[in-house]
Length: 70
Image (cartoon, rainbow, N blue to C red; front, top):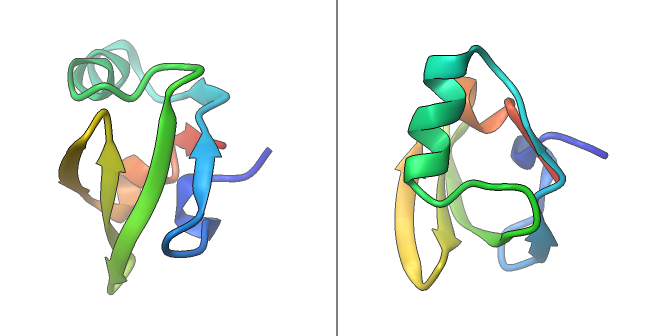
């Protein structure tokens, strides 16, 4: 298990766990970041990442991305 920030661009991964406090987890779950979901990193700029999840592209900060374990 590793944080989403360690994933290579274009690589398909499955989310294993979403950490953080309840507000952070709820926010990420509303965006589709739930255990078992497929996710891939589209690009990374200064630690912030653009990811593809559920046929959508979402930009999240590095602080959020380290809470998502793949």
